[in-house]
Image 1 (cartoon, rainbow, N blue to C red):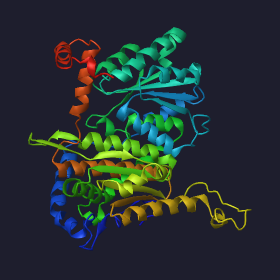
Image 2 (image 1 turned 120 degrees about the vertical axis):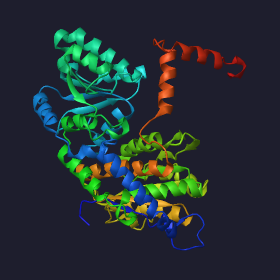
Image 3 (image 1 turned 60 degrees about the vertical axis):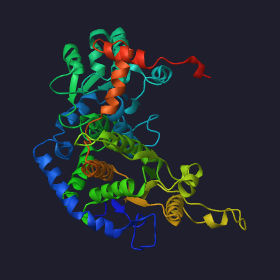
Image 4 (image 1 turned 180 degrees about the vertical axis):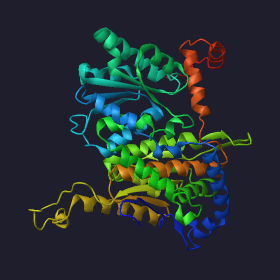
Length: 463
């Protein structure tokens, strides 16, 4: 196995002992091999027909992005991404994983990054106290330009830029949007903004390896060639239909079976690394939004999907693990391990004879955090809680690229197993529709009337 290949360890998620009640017996996996092979053929067919296209992203041309990096060097020190959901979470995750932990204070590799993924006005306006507008580049990201949160931020920022720079305001703004049509594309063309593309056939939560995530990555100093190379390595690795050779399909099947046959309706991802905690946020959107569906492909009501939960180790050993060990046995756990940190701290104990410190003498923080991970996995296993481990040899652009492609492919296979469409989000659209109605957007008058009729609240029940 290559030294920089991430690994999936399912030893604590399966059992060969028939007396163990709450773990998956390995024989069940064998029973599903033919189904996995059949679904693999369907996925390959959809890929060839370009019905799903996220697998193409590792092989894209990045010359336009590299030209942009040269163009903005020396002109700006800060990048602000205006986006939400799939236009934000990937950007945050990559920056957190691959840059200095406090890169917003000083980033020697490139621009500082801020991602404004909310419309809380107090939080949003505070941003302008910590950036210098003269040295700030903004990237507004929306495929259609119909996202209320993103476009409201854009309107505020654009008015500010025009007020200060007039015709040169466009030098501070880049639009990432659909290539052919949409409200944001129309605005970008009208204003003469530089444009990058949200690719066709790639939904927001699958878009981090497109211009949506790569633009910010290259400007803040991430090696996007290595990121894409890692994703390509995982994409090629997962072209096998054999469960024991395909970590994406194996993990998809495990989660599906635990959910549908053993009542484990919650998927907890717990990275033992503060730098990877936002990858768990990215996963939560990918898994929850893709698989949480009311209807299956036949139009039948099914109400499926695991609930994704993020925890961070060892931090949440002191807040959540009590529940995870002794609470309801309704969860599958993914512990993310980093074998080798870039830095380490060794301990020297001057308090000899003190049982609270003696065992730490001549040990290191890397040893401690890994011992805590394995300690938690053992504690969970003792209570027959299934534990999957995703093991990073180290955190770098190549391994993070692998992780992203692993989970995107896993989600594609899970969609097949659940027999739902993992690429739409009708529940999200319902919330957007109600928001547009409440904000008085033309075309949503009937929805506004429905809301006013159906939700006339009784003030007796407001305490």
